[in-house]
Structures are given as structure tokens and as C-alpha cells.
Image 1 (cartoon, rainbow, N blue to C red):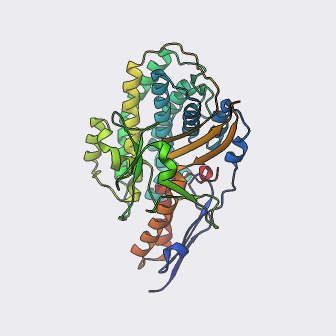
Image 2 (cartoon, rainbow, N blue to C red):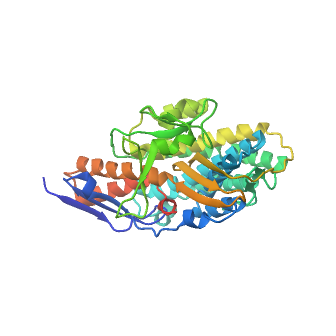
Length: 420
């Protein structure tokens, strides 16, 4: 078999900077590389020496797509370190904020980053004149979710300022929440059309043995907290994170690789979540999934796009339900500073996000570690690139290169987050 070299010097339509290098046949550990060359950003380093009440605002700046996820994960870890118990109202509002951001992020990925691959365009700008209705649909939906984030999390959708250790600096007015609820009802049809649109994408078929990992809880589609579970028997508390996973440094990428201890790579994100907790979806979302042909288990990484579209519908249904029953009461965040260590794991749009902090008796951070979804997916992205190229070995290089780009984009990586 002739050796083929697939090189993409700069992968477009992803968050951050990376390149792809694949040569087959050969040893996949040496010839498949996701060269993440986004410059390191040293967030873990300059969090050391900062007060606990500065951390949420700082880590939100790791990402302009998922600032709420970083903020909420950090806040939960700090609350655990200091023994702060958030109220049920705070937990509910945080869930709404998280879901609003998950949906908004998915929509940008589906319409702006992934869809051009399936419509035959190099980018969204070229595609816009041919699909104005779809792009208007994107704008309508994203506007509602951004406004929901701003109302709940504090003043603005990007880097909100009202979410703090112990609660919120300002609670939304019930009238604001009811108004947003009505707007969510108005985009229900748009979200369902999005699912049907994505289901019609002609995707390559790529099967493989993968370990899907996601948070699970007994009473909900886990987002902000839960147990670490997988399709291969993992079942652990978030406090046992480092007993389950380990980080590895490589010499060709600024991001670290995360593996399941003694097992290898893992997959996180929307497809992993649906594979593991499909039954926690609202019945109407499960009905929609069956209608468009989603079947369990789904082992095709290209179907992460479809899983994301279904999560957008789930976010609408959940937020409509929660906003309809929430009764707000004034609460003041109460924090007694004490030394401690705290770990938290949440489901960011792209999958598991881990924050760990050690703080001293003055509430100052002494140690910090942040592990992002793209670091969790790193090993499996490379493994799937190798599988894909082997399955297409008899096809032209241009077709293989395009499929490789589509595969990486289907994972919806955020390379900017990965080099925090």
C-alpha cells in the first residue's frame, strides 16, 4: 500500500489554532498528529495568588464561547473548598444559565462551523446568500439564548458578572424570566427544524471502539454536577477525578492529552452524553430523535452534530419548564473564608470540564488545575483520524483531507480552551 500524507497547515472553522498531519499506512502513534499550536495562555499560573472572589471573572476569559461553564465550574470547586452550600434557587438558576450557553454554543457550531462542510462551501460567508432563511433562524435562536444567559447570569451573555461564590449579586426579575420563557416557546419550531436539517447532512460512516464519558445523575440530564460514568463501567465521584484520569504532555502540541487510567482515550461531548443518558431526555426530545433516525448506541463521531442539535431542543424544553415554576426570593451570598481543596466537574458544551483549586486561610489560591473537553477528546480525535484515513485509503487525497477536516470539526473542539 502506498504511503499517503495528509497535511492541513491551518484548520479553519474551529476555535483556536491547529494543524493536522496524517500518514498511512504506519504506526498511528507516530504518524497521526493534531498539532495544536495555539500559544499557551497560562491561566493556571496566574490564578495562583488571586483571591477566591476573583477567580470566576478570570476563568470566564478563557473562552468567549463557554465563559459560563468555566465560571460555574470554578465557583463550584471553590464552594467545595470552603464548605459553601448553594441554595436550591441558586442551583436552579445556574442550571438555566448553563443550558442557555450550551444551546448557544451548539448553534454557532452547527450553522457557522459545521454546516458549510455539508453544503459545499468554504465558509459561512459564502453560504449566506444561498441559505438566508437558515441563517436568520440561527440569529433568532442565538439571540434568545444569549438574552437568557444575560438575564440569569448577570447583565451580559459574554463574561457575565452576576454569578459568584455562594449565589448571585443580582437576581433576575420574575417578569424578565417569563418574557424570556415566551421567546423560548417561539423558537421551539426553529430548534426542531435545526434537528431535521442536521439529520439530512450526508455524513461519512466511521465506527470504532470508544469509551464515552459523561456526568450522570438520578433525577436529571446532568449538566452542572453528577457522577463520572462511562459505557465501559466507570462510575466515580468527581472528587475521584485524578484516580480515573491522567494528563500527558506531548512534544508537538501546546495542549495536554487526557486518558482514562490504564485504558486509554475517551470521548466527551454531546454524542457521549446522548449515548449514556438518552433516557434522561424529555420524552418529546426522544420522540424527535427517533423520528430523524438517531439510534443507540451511536458510534459515529460525525453524529456529534446531530446530538448537539437534539441538545438544543432539550435545553429549550428544560428552560421552559424551569422558568415556568421558579419562585424567586432574595438571597445574599454568604461565604466564610477558610482553607481547603475543591474539585468540580461539569458538562461544558463540548464535554467534561474540570477545575481544581487549593486555597489558604485568606481565601487566596495556592494551586490550580483546569482540564477542558478538548484535552479529554485529544487522543480519540487522533485515533479517529487514523481510522478515517485507513477507511478511505483508495480515495483521492483531496477527498481524504476534506473528510479529516470535517471529522475534527464534528468534535467541535476549542483549541483556545485547551491551552489555557
